[in-house]
Length: 257
Ligand SMILES: Nc1ncnc2c1ncn2[C@@H]1O[C@H](COP(=O)(O)OP(=O)(O)OP(=O)(O)O)[C@@H](O)[C@H]1O
Ligand SMILES: [Mg+2]
Image (cartoon, rainbow, N blue to C red; front, side, top):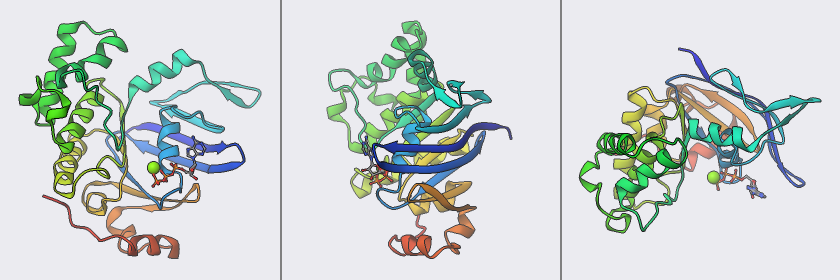
């Protein structure tokens, strides 16, 4: 396995509030990393810094060995054009899927490929169909999002991100807003991606997914990685009381069918 993402000493503050206080993380190609932590611990901020939706206050991020940004006098500076390219290399899926309601499913999956990557329409269309097939929704290609279930919309959002051929995929609580009976189909899609070797960073409260699918679990607490380890050991025997308390508040380990 080779290193695909490296985060060094990542700090992020919003005015006086220091949210990330020095995150170090190296992710190998094909790894699935689950990030756990209570509300406000900085999970979303961390993912948003990785794809530069938020600019880190300090620290360095490398994607496939490339340092993102330029170092000047010990400070990183970022050019918008470089960040646009970077964002196309990192797919992100959110809790709310943000599909365009006036476009069909296929058009939603096409759009970014044509606009951001400059792909020819036919190529983008083939790619979009292939990704919809991958998430099990090829037959919905010509529907509008309003006619899909929440789980289906979320799978379209995943297909849309995959169509950009990302090197890494970030998932931020993608099942949290779904009705319980729809959670399973989205987790199944994510599990399949993990098994296909996609590199994934997933913020989720689905401990069953963490237990059965992740290669590594991180526990973020007050802006630092308090502990990390293999899911089978860390989820059963965390080192810290803080993580133990967090886990006590969650029901464990059933992976929805
Ligand atoms: N754009 C922003 N401006 C100011 N404060 C922010 C901003 N984004 C996040 N914060 C603050 O940073 C802290 C961490 O937020 P973040 O969204 O990263 O937490 P989280 O771990 O994802 O929580 P949750 O589980 O509720 O999603 C919170 O105190 C939040 O209020
Ligand atoms: Mg969050």
